[in-house]
Length: 405
Image 1: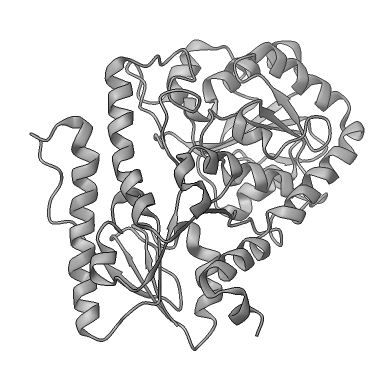
Image 2 (image 1 turned 120 degrees about the vertical axis):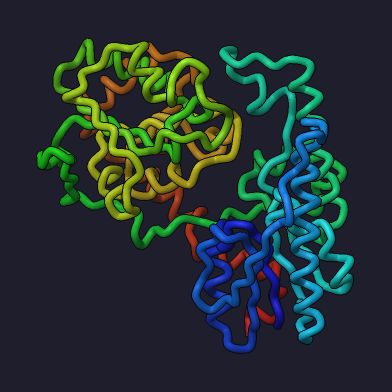
């Protein structure tokens, strides 16, 4: 079978499934991505580059669409070259969010096109307008509506699609729901697992273990979309009451979603200017190597995961897989995974006093969380493993008959 992957950061969400497909010598895999794409062993990597950026004169609502068109054109040029060389994919798997797959059906009309439908935007009921600190204007609403034009084109032309969570699937228009299969790519439970002997060494040389009273927080970047301001306000309250609690924060100072603060270099600096915390007990660790990051989770006494109603982070599932006692925000994507009192706790995203109080209770009674921690691990092992996700992907790509041979 000949397979084509389109993802500007390949492998991205396709890593585990592509690795399994590449292990079959009868398959030929080619991936197209941009220069920053890491690539993957066993997959031929072709890098493309749009000829230019969107014009400054383009209406700002349409700059994202122009960027998508430019990416789609660059991909087509690469595909035409592959076609002349005799490559004709049976299946094309694409993340369509950047426009790379806009015109693939014009080059390979017989190929089966599978789209990874990560998100469909809404002006109400999801991330936009959720936080009162960032109210939506009519201009914002119009921009969001226009932004979905690309996603509608993608939904219309794909043969089948995949969404990683039920909530993310539910955001897409009802007319396309039957096209979308629910498949989470899964987390590596071979690495992300409980370890009572784990320890983590701070930059100053001090060694922390699960016997310390530790609160952990993880995000790709420390920003409002992942509840960083609310977390910092809760920690200030908690530390004022509890001189024995230490806090470990993993994440960078960039912006993955939303925008930078207008009055500070980054959200960390802005919150440090707003709240009073003990710097000796609050450790900003930046971005860590994966195994070090897992050690932070493995020694956690209470792990906080806050998010707008948006894409669910892998870090939540990894925290549950290692047996963290997770306190999550009572928002739609988190409610899909956490059942309060069974495999974690939920708290109002904006109620920092409630979060601080619950953290104190959890840290004071670690023995009472044993069953909950085990249930969190079981939740991931029963429904969110790499093996389960990859098998579902392969059945969608190859068909159950070929997979069962």
